[in-house]
Length: 184
Image 1 (cartoon, helix red, strand yellow):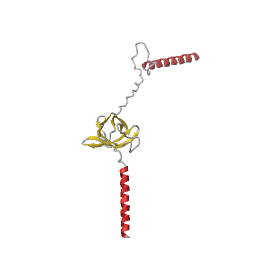
Image 2 (image 1 turned 120 degrees about the horizontal axis):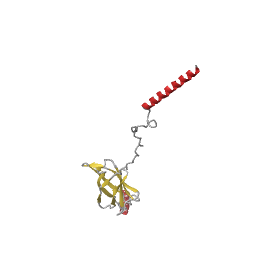
Image 3 (image 1 turned 180 degrees about the vertical axis):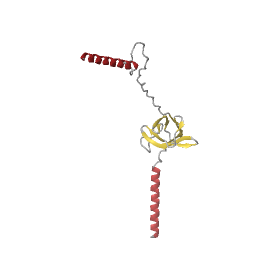
Image 4 (image 1 turned 90 degrees about the vertical axis):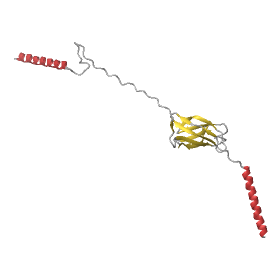
């Protein structure tokens, strides 16, 4: 009985091993990603450490990383997934675009999972165009009066106004004196 039980266990183990080996040989390993690496500059300066970088194939996001500093240089390494591991991603020769800190980089790469692609990313941020403000409305420049003219219509009262008021006052008093003399 012991030999029968031992033989049954050995047969079960052998059958399980054969089944596992058959399953392992039927599955192929996943297709490796395409790897890109290089420096990252923004406006000629090293990109700040931690700046996000996204790799896209078409409109599909196929890899994400961040900028790190190495030897005083801003660098990145990113793996771009294959279409076999993520739908819409890399196939041999597919164009890979990069988004650095939310801005599309002008450099692109070609998806090849059999070699490391050295690709430096250099962004130039858009400079805002200066808005022009119209000059302030011109204010008239005061000019000295021309001889024989009055500035009463353009400027604050000057000495002539005082003279005019004094003349009117004396006429008023003269008129009152005349009226008083007529009453008597």
